[in-house]
Image 1 (cartoon, rainbow over the protein chains, first blue to last red):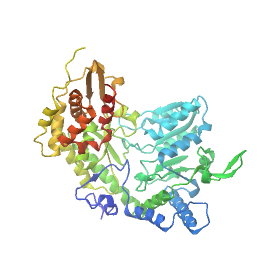
Image 2: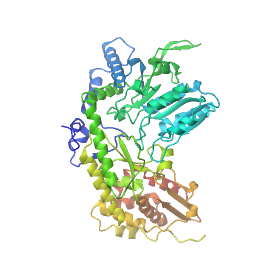
Image 3: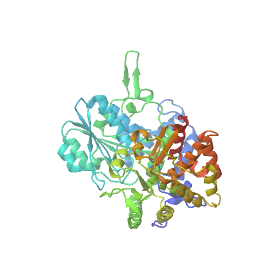
Image 4: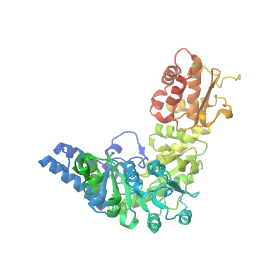
Length: 404
Length: 131
């Protein structure tokens, strides 16, 4: 049974069961909890014999290689892609850095790289550094007062000088969803590449990279019920061919002499060193875990819960929302009137409510909408009405303390 | 420059205020009340260059003529800063040592040591470089 009060998903997460104190975990935008089956699959991989992939011919190595490549296929299907379009990375940040390095040859002096004002640092700083290196300009799509990006501004300003547009699918600090298909169309009109940071989207939307029509899509395993240290860089065939490797060694190499070296084919060309085999297996396991539930039901549970939380917060006389985007996904940012977000954070923690306070690694957006930072409530599959109610009760208690 | 200290409380007086607290909520209530004991820092010193790096909230620290001035825009931190200042004037041991001992006695050490990003460590490190 799945309702706001009782979610059938919660029972699968050992960390949220079995404690005496009710613990409301509302920080899934930072990291999601891990279901039992993922823990088991990671353990089983090591127990059954761990070996490096694509190297030896013994049975442990064969087993590891099979599981690793099967995981790639699982991840590919999850976003509507083919296995050869999936590059394993350590996470979104590494994927963004791989891209910023690998696409440097596209950018010349005076060219433009566009990001939006709501990017978190991982999808901003690599592009800023690339712009410095190539003497290009970093241009910013501004955010409107409600937290949506100013698409009209971009339409007006975008020119053929633009080589790359890098945007988040969903903002990690205010939950605003970006119009990716439209942004892709605009980018391609100007022969630019579009990079979509999907870190905050993959767990909450039905992702199809074909429909989004983007060149690159990146995300992390630990926000998708999988382990840390594993992530995905998807690229279309043509887009991946364009990428020059920036990390060298291991399976990415085909031939080496002291004079020169040649690279392996895709996807291996972009996967230097020994990959995170257990991580890939764990992430695939998380995808299989999600796939056992009808996606409509899963997403509708989240949408209802978020709507409930939004309604509760909106009604609260001491709550000030930060950003009210048209399309909100997975999270809500707010402040408590007269209370510094860090003070609130300290007290939420005391009352067993886990949520994030501060600038959420997106300082430019923070300084635009809420200079002192904000409190971020984000949800996962396992959350229920009780978690939200607990957070609201804590708000009342905090306000009691502060109003004295 | 000859200004009165920002806090007129000794460590003993602070400890007395917490003496009858039986729950952590009461301790936090006291901490919030304590924040009111911090007289304002001259706003001309609340500058970018006096901001202490490593605090999620803004904390300013200014030191001149053996006088220390600090302030924060977060109340819990402000309460802790009162304890920091009272530890600073004690001068029997390092501010850091007195501060941690006091937190322990007040029953706040456990609750606050977990949130490392509150920046108190950064403030204490900065103070250690002053004298």
